[in-house]
Image (tube, rainbow, N blue to C red):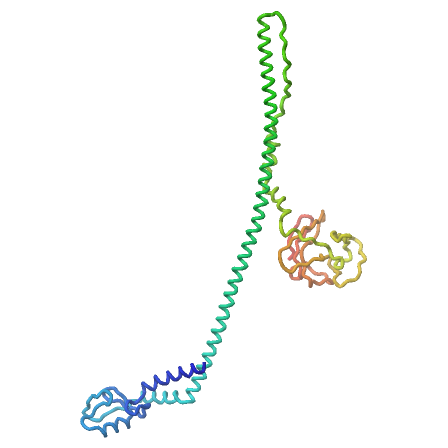
Amino acid sequence: MAAAAAAVASSVRGSLREDLTCAICCDLFRDPVMLSCMHHFCKSCISRYWRGSQGPVTCPQCRKEFTSKQFHTNYIVTAMVEKVRVATSDACIKKLEKQLSEALERHHLRKEYIDNCIHKDKEKMDIIKRVAADLRDRVKGEFRALHQILQDEETCMLEQLRREQEEELQKVQRHLEASELSVRELENNIRLLQQANGSLTEFPQLRPCVQVEPDTDFDVNAFSSRYLAPLQYITWRKMFHSVKPGPSPLVFDVETAHPSIYVSRDKTVAVECDDMILHTSHSQRFLQCVNILAVQSFQSGRHYWEVEVGHSLKWDVGVASEAVDRRARIKLSPESGYWTLRLRKGNEYWAGT
């Protein structure tokens, strides 16, 4: 980077010196003067050139002839030369090289930082794409399972409907066939009676008719009720058993129970009692708030559980931070480390805030 700074400084210095260099001595102007042709030379250089030349007075650069040896001092060029002389001094060049080096260093560091950001962004994009692909596969898999459950349930229900339809049709068919047989026998007896009525010699021998019981009316409502019911709800209840994850199995942590809470032997039931219950002293026990925690804890993921609250008119159910104060009486709110759903007066539900 220092070499690059030196190269830049050298290029700038060379360009300035070229514009302000005398064509005679090939050095920076000293007391620069301007001829009428607008070319500049050192005062001493042009004077010496004219003294040594024979013939007409001319410009050493463009060869324009003049009637006399006249020139004018150019104070602007003089000032520029002095500035360039100072600016191109070793001290100034070193200072410029240092500034350029520092600027290049800053730019290289900035570029390195941005390149690193670009690399991280690309890594994030790859992660996002990979995670999204995994999630997409999971979603497809979950819904594939749900579709299969629905397909199986639909097939089962349609098969059941087919069997019930077949049973009902067979019952009606049997009754129809019996009725038709009875009609044919009655028609035969009628014909015999009509024939006997013409001769009046003897009573004909008649065949007994098939006894046909009157069929009960087909109950359309009873047949349809199962299939006119809210099938989505019924199916959802059946699908509920296949939901993953299922309800988290929780048991109560007796060591956290407030002294007025009774815990069942299997640690799945907790009841608030009027009298204090003798518990062993424990640092995790609630002493003021009538609370109890479960043994299980969660740090991430999605979880749900089912709690039977019975006919209680007042309760709080939710989750609590591991660091909640267990010795003070505090409000069950997110600020205190509690996220709860509560019931008051038997019919007032709201979230703890």
